[in-house]
Length: 301
Image (cartoon, rainbow, N blue to C red):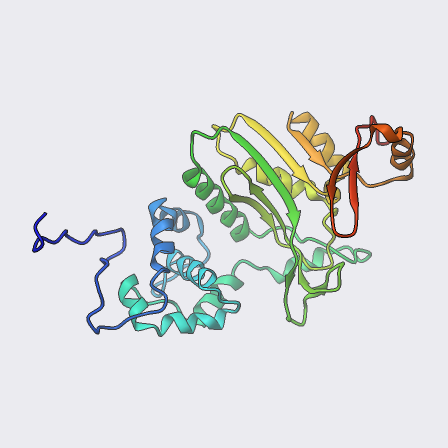
């Protein structure tokens, strides 16, 4: 190639090409359009438009446009809807995206459509912590994620190991509840497909809802989100998943699992009966040394 020959800029999915700046409008968010490109590469915008029918509209932004705006906001590190103004007012980012971003009010209306406050009337009087049933828009959002998993996962991987755990998200809203370790906020359950590094299921919960409160519903949905080509399924969870209906489900579905067991008096007695010579050192930590041994234990029935 001669010194005067230039390769033509590569055109991606969005209406922009990469060039050197010549003094035109620039942005500090130049990487954000790649988030939208990745979503559109798996045609997620088509799934959103076909699945999320939240409200009839005559004009304004589509569900897919609002959905993409929220993806951009999260990727940019925003922690409140109002932060969309920073992206919305960035002229350089607007040129790269080729579209205008929704306003904070438009996104708040979009998110509010996923909630149904009347469902809380079904809460049992004696329940201190409760997970309300999902609304139709939330169920549709699960279908969007199911489609994303099927399109983003690599087909050559026929094994799925799901890591299931709760995560505490600090929040300062007035109606946020206090979690078990003292943080005020929310405590959703999340299931991650380890081999693909994809979230395949989640269940949003108040902060005071413990992880061992019906984890089966969350786990069942997570396995339902796996593509049909998955042949081998595995499950890993902490002691919050030491829940009889969940254990029976895993056995019935022939899913191999590893779950931390609650140290009940019966299990402790079983462990203490293991001869000292059969305990093997696993790890030496700052404040403890961990040993392991194999025992046979039947929990209850």
